[in-house]
Amino acid sequence: MNDSSYYVPCLAMVIVLVLKGRTVLLAWRDPLLRSVYALLLLSVLVFLFAAPPTIDWVNRVTGVPNISAPVVYCLLSAFSASCLVLIINWRGGPPEASRRASRRWIAGYAVVIVATAALFALGNTPEQRLRDFDTYYADTPFIREMIVLYLVALTVANIAMNMMCWPWALQVHGWLRVGLLVIVAGFFCNIAFAATKLTAVVARWNGGDLDYLSTYVAPALAAAAEVVTAAGFCIPLAFQRVGDVWNTWSTYRRLSPLWRELRPLSGHGDRAVRIAWWSPAELQVTQRESDIHDGMLSLYPYFDPALRTRAYTAALATGSSPAGARAEADAAMVTAALRARAADPDGRVITAATTTADPTSPTEGPRDLVGMSIALRRSPVVAEIREKTG
Image (cartoon, rainbow, N blue to C red; front, side, top):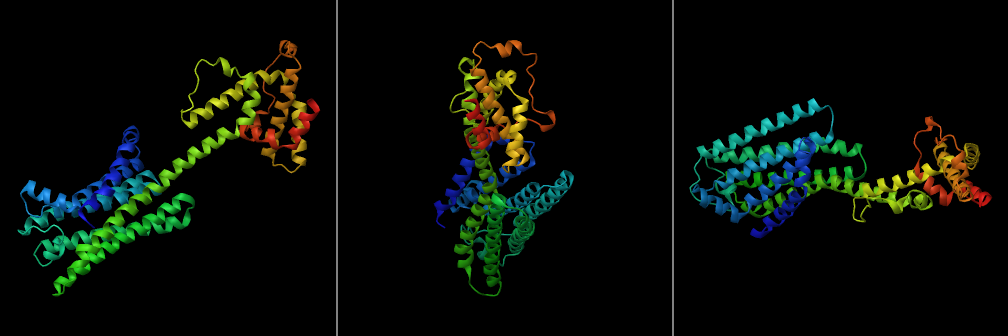
């Protein structure tokens, strides 16, 4: 990796952090959301402080040669802990058990971070090394132990995460499974990173020279691991949101036939507050459903329960499920009521009506507006009612 390539994923994650910052502040009590944000933030810090220009700057500003090494190792340990905590909160389970497991992992990696700092303070690294610190000081007392400690801690964390993610991925489907498999691939890259580094260090202990593994191969594996892992965590969350928006707009579109039928009765044109076209999809659907209910309210005196019962029986006879038959029966009743209202311009039926109660049985629950809207276009039962009342 060249010097600038460290900053590209860093910048990409900063953009995500900025975009999601307000969401996190509004829902800070959500442990899953906090864990995602912590993971992304630590990913940014790892890339930022692992870049050779940043390493050189930190060493010069602090005046301590190679102080960046323990800083990066501590950030990697914190990143490992954040991954474990996110997996625990994401997988769910009893809240108290999740909190206990999270605290144990955080405490364990806090010990690793303190030990890393202590070992660096006890060691001696007078010559600055921007790219080959691990192999150059592989035989230095205390520094050697520090290097092994962070590599072992990183490996343990990634093995533990794979042991949690892989069985879970086999139990779920959709974007969650995709995200988990991507996460597993990222963890394997981290294990390969640690193994490559450790191989180069052990080679130094035995008088060999495999420094290129640590200097060139391992950074590429680390970058891949960080990006792939972060992407794996983001994929299910992002695509779930996309899927939710898609489903909402799909509901909005499928409500169109019923809404167009009832719109003239809903007082839509006299509405004091109009919904802008750029309003959120959920608000658009809510407004459309409100228009439909307002239109149906004016039709209640014209509803014919006997016609609805006949339409329900006919729909069942054509092979519809009970829920589908109810939607078809409601659509047929609305169709007939619209014809009846059009044939009563003076509103005699409304004047003579003693109740405006909805004839739907309370035990059937609320009407399926989407099912009614679809039935208006596709149901042969509704088409027959339309012909008879037309």
